[in-house]
Length: 251
Image (cartoon, rainbow, N blue to C red; front, side, top):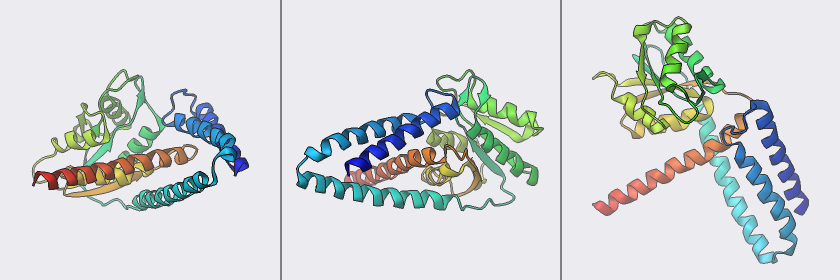
């Protein structure tokens, strides 16, 4: 077991270093998790031989439960990637992602390129680009997204900006306010690892008929994104449980 911890620690730290080298960004999204996980496993590798057998057994049980939960959630996230886009939607919402200064990043470019393909195939569709200004961003994400679409020859009248949101939930809440009355069918454009949670959040925020339009993601960072999304989806369901519990108490 000790050797297993050390091997896992090395793999996690190597993945962390690989992410930093690949992205050339010391603050790459969620990369810190792999460094911390590697350190924790290294520490466990040192102390496990000195721990009581009962405690080691209890930790093994907890790890087994966590692994089952992790696999179930990951399968659910993967199932969302099978969503097929519906033709003729009146509106699609392109969810924002971080930009560097004024430059769009790889994940956001993939979302926008997917939106462009959909807009080309569905000439009556309007696109809402959604995203405010975050740390390290010189303009709003919506502004950068709109500029990219215009550069790709999407007509200006087919683009609507929502530039106040900071989170996925706010993307959807604020974009919903821009929908015309009677528009019930809406497409959500985001990366494959994110599509499941985005659709769930949309339904939780009053969207009646929402359809996923799935863009790809960087294959090198796919596992990193999937693990990050595990915690995000878990947080979403915990929030739903707390909300349901509060509503029952209030009754």
